[in-house]
Length: 450
Ligand code: GDP
Ligand code: GDP
Image 1: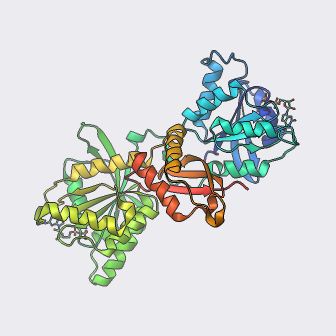
Image 2 (image 1 turned 45 degrees about the vertical axis):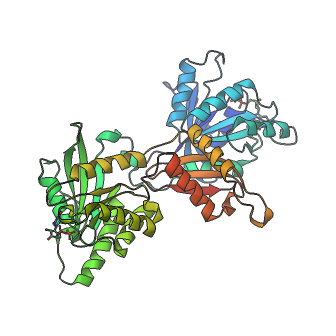
Image 3 (image 1 turned 30 degrees about the vertical axis):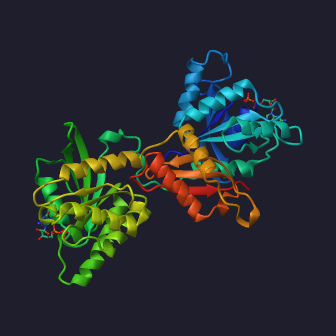
């Protein structure tokens, strides 16, 4: 069974962590504490919030330790729990207000990559109002008012945690654990008929590249080929290449071929982490190429574009610039996608192509820290504040990266669901250009708390 998403509860003593833990886990399961081998500073249990199941860890790393001496075993455990979690749930006490230790914890959480949801507990009645307002100053976005004891604020809590615990099905999830560099790169080469896909695949496989695996069927008419590529540094990099039937077989009717190649491309895209779109230098860019590129990006795959038959290209440099310009004009999302000249016939550019493919996969899998992200975000919003549709202000507070492969972000604030597409594009462009995600598709979701 797939591992449940995990939430780590963090906070100073007495804010109500155990009370919340017990409420979410249910009394019976809260006894996990006593299992041998489980240290008392880390209780774990399966929690349910409005029907969504997740694993919850009650850390107590800040409890028994002098806040002045931050390192130590307890603190290390809390750090480990937060790093492993899909989200940290940071609890403060709305009645007591914000203390220096809360600020200390907030500073630490802002420097971690794990997304943080901030909740001000004991907020039932009026006594919690002051502390709730103070909690904004922690720089962790909008605090949710909850009462663990009385079960208030559960819907808001769910709303904020949902992006992290309601995970979309990730087809690569079980591999994420494996060492990134040693995990085979899942690669598909797509393109119009006659672009040179078969020639390129054959060339790649015959050149001192070791085929390591038997051919395993991916779908009825496609196979995967496992092989290893030696990069410029002499490292062995495993690759799994998909080869769809349409790439090898040749149909007679041109019309059929066109359809076949689009369907093939879709199948290959489903399988791949990185899609190489092969263009034909002698033909330039056509609408079908853009459709294939668009589909790969829509599906959230990393893309590399290769211009094949470079050996017979005329006016090489103006051809290259021309294709780049036409690509960007036709499809703004391909801005920043690597464009590489290759020749399947001579082998030129193939190592460069493979190296670009590994590079974009790294970017595609990258996580930016919440601190770096929000420093950029504050500037971006300051430089270009969101509009006020109907005269009502949209308030943007906080952004967090909820996923990788592709990098996905969630925006928090008031009325963010009314944010115009053009403003979201502004932010996505900023994330791509200024945070180094330029080569890959980026997703941005906006969520407004109820
Ligand atoms: P922990 O040390 O963070 O695990 O905190 P506990 O869960 O042990 O709670 C500390 C104290 O706060 C206990 O006396 C709880 O009954 C109380 N408490 C917890 N949640 C609430 C709440 O929502 N409202 C109020 N008024 N008290 C609460
Ligand atoms: P596919 O339909 O995309 O698999 O394309 P093929 O690999 O069958 O290639 C189509 C045609 O282009 C064949 O005649 C190849 O010999 C030719 N071709 C493929 N790559 C190159 C190349 O790099 N340079 C040249 N000049 N011709 C190529």
